[in-house]
Length: 207
Ligand SMILES: Nc1nc2c(c(=O)[nH]1)N(C=O)[C@@H](CNc1ccc(C(=O)N[C@@H](CCC(=O)O)C(=O)O)cc1)CN2
Ligand SMILES: Nc1ncnc2c1ncn2[C@@H]1O[C@H](COP(=O)(O)OP(=O)(O)OP(=O)(O)O)[C@@H](O)[C@H]1O
Image 1 (cartoon, rainbow, N blue to C red):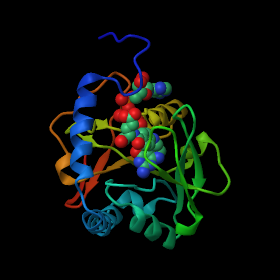
Image 2: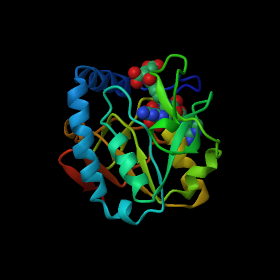
Image 3: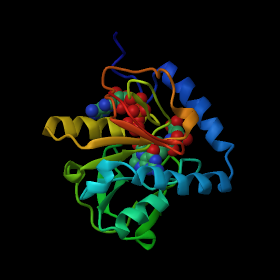
Image 4: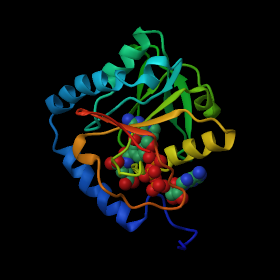
């Protein structure tokens, strides 16, 4: 399958349609829905063996209708796990900073995107993610093969390519709502599979 070289980010037509539908459902969630999910999701994620033994976890701070990650971030930090958080760069690549508690986050507006909460401390560089034993990824859906649909920035595609190029294999875990685990999502050649999904009903590994 060919694709014009000028294909703008996230422009794959099937992906765009599905993203729009999934985002509309998330937008209809209330603050209480999100908060409720946050508690259950943390408990489910902490049941993962890979998270229990991880020294460093690359995560992200959920915003808006994303399944809440705040409780999980604080639980990991409380048990002494080093937590890295992404800083979005101008070219959509990700830099990283350490999570030092809720007070260490800054609200950052990136043009055309939802406001994000990013670590305000020192930047560790895009390669810092290579130190992670587990990477928790945001997404909009995952399918039975573990193929993930993201927001279309390609940031995590780049992270996964960087991990592969360096020959490191952290456990890749996407955090979603139950209804976002689908039979099949549209994919392109660069899309790589994740190892597991955690939803409020539990964790599931892909083979
Ligand atoms: N909480 C969180 N942090 C994250 C991500 C994420 O998905 N969630 N990212 C994941 O890569 C990176 C930031 N990338 C982002 C990419 C797009 C949008 C965004 O707001 N997209 C709009 C659509 C914009 C458009 O269509 O042009 C949207 O989703 O409504 C936000 C962040 C790193 N940090
Ligand atoms: N390794 C890479 N380096 C640079 N750009 C890439 C890489 N992989 C994918 N891209 C580009 O990123 C854009 C978005 O890709 P895609 O639609 O798969 O994003 P996504 O996986 O949904 O989003 P995200 O990774 O941010 O969660 C595409 O234009 C794609 O060509």
